[in-house]
Image (tube, rainbow, N blue to C red; front, side, top):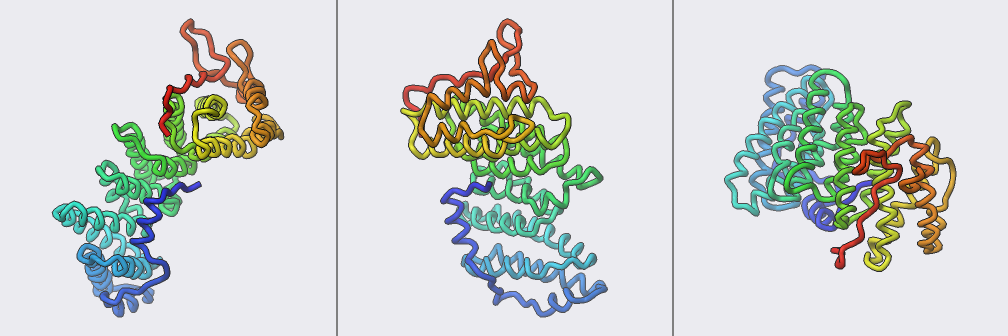
Length: 373
């Protein structure tokens, strides 16, 4: 699931016109000849460097959106998998994007925003591990759109497929990216839902332990937002819950913290739907209904959690809160009796004030008198 709000759709529509466009201002004759050679000499490598120096400088100078898109297309279309070519292309791309990002810092704020954004769009499209540091440097930018694209660059599936290994520099970079994302989530300006969606997809694909840690951290953010009645876009939790469920079912000895977060978040989503009938907007109730039904279908209705059932779907379709409450009680139980899902997952929910294990998820606090939507 990829979440894009209108602001990002409009932005990309402006900055990236449809269709393949060729730059009219960059001479590609020499670079095209070099791109088709099997063995390169020092002159060929210099041609690659000169091409990127000119093309990337164009992104700094050009103000016309169409020309910017043409320039990016020209850069991307002149990549190659030939080893010498690819190495020089990567080195030169890093050198000139870094240099021009530094020059962009001297521009007026609005112009700087557009330039930096275009460089991040280019970095995202290049999917080059060498360029990850340039995006990491923008994770703390004051502008939420810049932060979104910085996260997008370093969570790009094409990039991660190159890094998802247990060896060497790739592993170290992957761990560094994960650490930076954890800091971003912990910051005073936590990521917007669109950005959390990207991080969720990233964490779900990681084959290293840090991926589970990041997924737990994301879930804790969502659990707190539910408890505070500050959730705005419940559909995000379909991705979060599915990612947690996949972690539960993909290994023989699932992390109990993953299972506990899955149950707590799902219980909060169901409780929000039940308690918020007279408070939430129709849109938010539709979002929640989708989360409940999709999670039942894709996660809890499949072994090893429960086996095939569709009671939640029936309750939602019949608009029966009493039926949904009955299914909630069956799944999650109460403080004296564990529910069916709790037993299947073989978990508890921490301890209460007296030190006894909690047999049921935390209850969602009552909503405030005015719920912000």
